[in-house]
Amino acid sequence: MKLGMKKIVLLFSVLILNLHLVAQTDPPQSEEKIKIVKALGADSLGYVDPDVLKSYNMGVEFLKNGQLQQSIEAFNQTIFMKSDFSKAYYNRAIAEKQLGNYEAAVNDFIKFAEYDTLPVEGYYQAALVYYETSRHDEAISMLDKALKADNTDERFNYQKGVVFYLMEDYDAAIEEFTSALQKQPNDAYTLNDRGSCKRMKGDLQGAIYDYEKAVKADPNMVIAWNNLGSANREFHNYAVANDAYNKAILLDPKNAIYFNNRGYNYYLLGQYTQAVKDFDMAIVLKGDYAFAFSNKSAALVKLGKFEQAAAQASKAISLMPGNGYAYLNRGIAREMLRDKNGACEDWLKAKELGVSSASAHLSNTCN
Picture (spheres, rainbow, N blue to C red):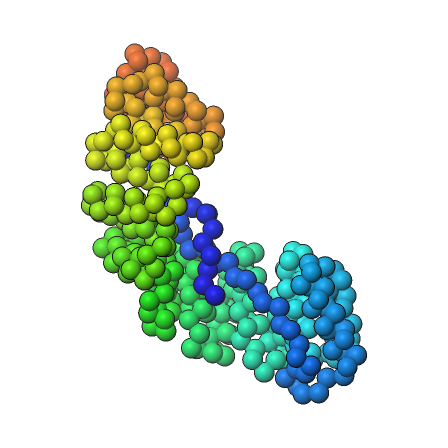
């Protein structure tokens, strides 16, 4: 099963003239559903004692009903009677994982791999637990074992790519995603995620190529449409970017990120009124969306609405006090309102928060 994308986003900051807007995109994220293995009366070792099967099947039923501790106790009894019953380890691992007992889950998945005639799934599931607990090196090690056991399954290369992405080793991630695509050439998620790696490396043309292939493979893949829009925006193909954002919004009209990103693109096109409308929609959908408030302030400055711009930047700051670019934008609005002291205070704060462009404002206006 391929990943299910969560809305965990990576921020991309781009300076626009003297103002600052923020767009957002979606990096790879893996979410695997683990199946419950139902006993058929015997495991891979042959005949199994009926008492063992009774205990095992009881554990399966408890697990299916969400009675996790009871399922663990039943599998404990199964393993006590038959210590090499691989499926009992596998299903006990599922229960342990759901209870947050990650080390116990990993140990049981590895036991499954040790005893089962098809060990690869044990290594893979152990890798996912390591991945979900941010133990990236261990995840890679387990995935290598899975690949050694079965080099035909593209999931293992794909998952390695996801882990390498999170480790910011984009070259290694691209290599793994490419290996996965050699096994399953038209997988939209893999194409999208390889495109994101290329984008992180600054290869916008390569990213656009992969995002285009992703939406061709799956026209309903909203994340790929958003990413296609953002890559084209960064490549200054603003009209193409707008078309992609339109498609993303059509597919997911309640996603604030996509309205924020299209608003950013309208800003770059000089369509400031339309940009404000999109930022407003993003705020309606996500009332605590600090970046949308800050972006709206930048567009309002362009429209000469300085008091409103300062108010929107202040709202962004109240939601995210560490957002230096909101201070930068409010400082610009305050300067236009002839509040030199307020502007200088904001730019000084922006500089303290790491916004390098604030130094020029301080030098030109405040010294």
